[in-house]
Image (cartoon, rainbow, N blue to C red; front, side):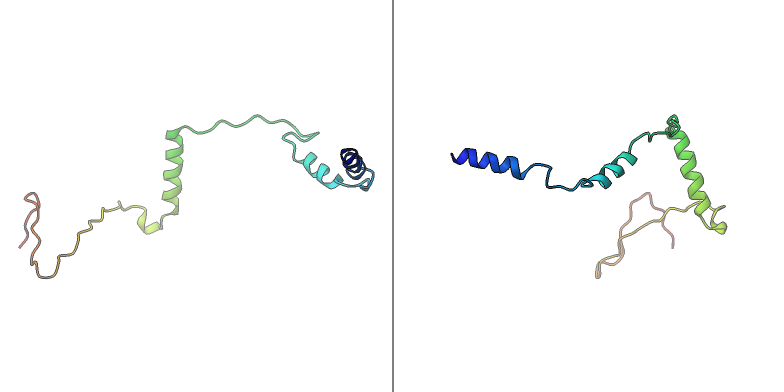
Length: 102
């Protein structure tokens, strides 16, 4: 008996009769506009991508164009970062391959 009452309420309460006729129309219209190929549009072929060498050339040209005019002719110098000496240890002993300047 309870099951029949629950099913009848579910059928009556969940029907579309209580919804107005325009319910969901704007969503359906917007989703229709988001199609991959809208009706009436001309189909175009996908463009081919760049290979790695072409992409590197384009990126280098882009970076070169962003640099200030006075820095475009200079090569970037490497930066040497040296840890400071600890207090009380005196001079730092360097590797034998490092030339000594006095």
